[in-house]
Image (cartoon, rainbow over all chains, first blue to last red; front, side, top):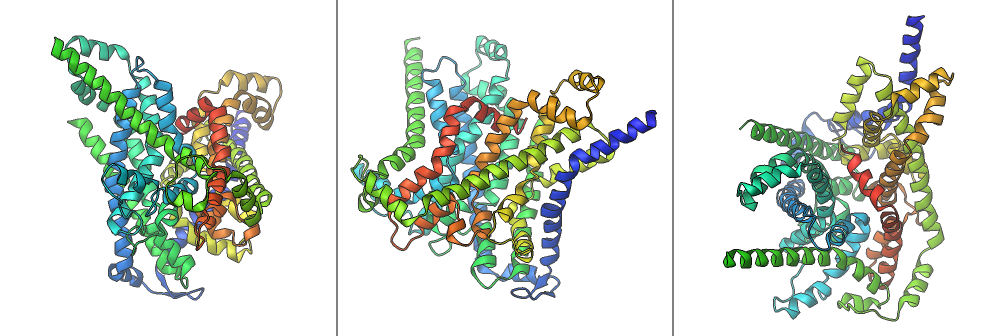
Length: 292
Length: 274
């Protein structure tokens, strides 16, 4: 009797998860393994042949790939820290219940992450044109027009500004939620003991937010490594590949030129490996800090 | 003490200044979009920030250039059907993983969490070849199906299920309901706020999805709102008035959901992680 119940539990357990597991197997596990296999194949179109490590060798000599890789790493290294610091500052400021207009500021800063990536990218493109509204304003205050879309450096700055606009409020919401779970009496005690605000932030707030900061850093890293919609719609990857990202390059290799599936699979595995390494490093850094 | 007080006033002032700048920067593109849809294309390109009188002309040209009802239907169909299927399959799995525990399934679950960090960029090439071999290129099926089993949403439901009172399940069993009936008649009604929050996240993701539909949907009559917005701005001589209208179209549903269900919306975003 008991054995029969246990067996029925087992069967039901599998039945509930089966549809999802079957779909994940077909549309996730199988493709990822296939792309690993493909990355050892060379050839164009649908004709493959085994090429060993030829694709990896090709990576090291492919200047466009190296540029896409360095662009992606620059976006990551510059944008993610700026965004996380801004989001933290806003969250701490908005956590003050005595702040006037708190709900308004919170909603306003959160609002950008309601837009679709394409819609906001297109808006930014129109705002940052040569004679666009941003340059009109910059000229009015005496800074003068900036070649946002035509200069390699400023095009990168524009992409960073755009992503920061879109995602800062999103990260802020996580920090605000975490701050709301913090016991206020700790702050009261610290304040009465005469601990200055910056020290309260550094020694109380930051350590308590560490798990959330780690989490948001990991998802921002994964997101930035896959950056596509913004460069595709704001700068078209240009000027002269200055905003070409890894995802964009895979797209070009696969769908713009004569497809070279094996090689684009290799580039996509570069992203997989980078995500793995960076996530691991971030976890290690967080653990290291915990010990000291 | 006076200096202290003055310092604290300055700090307050800087705080409000900073927040006001942030709020202005956050809201301005929305203002720009709405005002832009009332201006001519050259006016927008030259940075006119005041409302114009070309709203109706822009809308008329938008409807001329694009089969708007068709585009809207495409997006709505993909988003609604995709969301419904994702919620069914992923909530079943989330419930199953939490309610029926076995060591083997726990291992599978841990493995799925690892897979959470697999970037879509790594899947798109094989998925594309797979869909073209199946003859599904340019179909909504190809857009919808790969996203139905979402590890993220499975995880979300599993976490939420931890709060599902087991007494309800025991009572339902005593009443003679089988496991499926318990899921449909007890679990779903009790967890409706979890479903609501998940609906918002999944609907948003589907409505805004870009790269995969861009690859799969190839003819104009199948294109979704985001694809049309992008195509309009890719034109040789982009008509900014029309682009602004199309951006309003793309943004309106999600902005409406946000303002109508603000609390749920934020809960959903946060809940997916806790």
